Length: 303
Image (tube, rainbow, N blue to C red; front, side, top):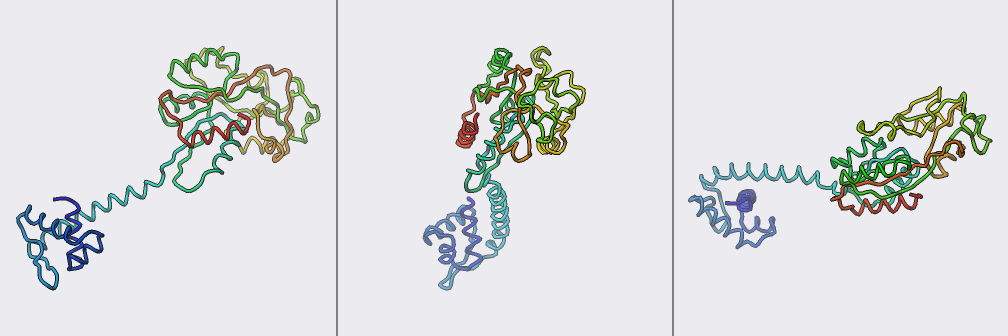
């Protein structure tokens, strides 16, 4: 006995004719009749009494139909439940540092997608979370950022964790301020020019096992007395554009971003550290077509 035979019995009982049931189920009528007969022989009962006018359920058939209909309905319910969940078949996931050019690449990437069935994850987070989520498979790709002076240390660490890595971009942080800021017209700023202003900063975490001398963040001056910590992208730009007494160290971003928020980006000769953005993935993970499409957009955005 199998599910196909049960479906044949249920449909035949519903329409009262094996020929009509066969048409409804898109099978040949002799095949349906043979399947029902084989079922009757296997169970040792007669499900249908046959006549020139069609078929009718026997008393055994009435009892059997009760069980057959229940099995078919429950099976179809399970099939429908999982069919509803199947459209999400194309997944993309990445953890990244706060970065204007990476965010722009993700926007361009999503604009190129066609059709439906996508599940996309884009998480702005710190180095600790990125390494953890890539290692445990929560995210397929990650971008970590570190001071290039510690390049050997980080590359050794990635090798030890069986993570593949690819250089994306090297850069020096710039200072972003409102066009209304008192230092907006300087062209380039020194640390002394930032005295009295409020730095907009992000609290980042690193692996606790890293030596402090290696993981200490160099994005901001350690002696800054006024600091505002923010945790989302919109707050940082609203503060910068609306408060001329604020500034922020920023990584590369499209020209459209400072134009949109009325900001000025300036070099700082006193900030000598060069940073690197590095793409990481698990060694055994094979990039998907979606991954490769994103990487194309990342390169086009300057990565």
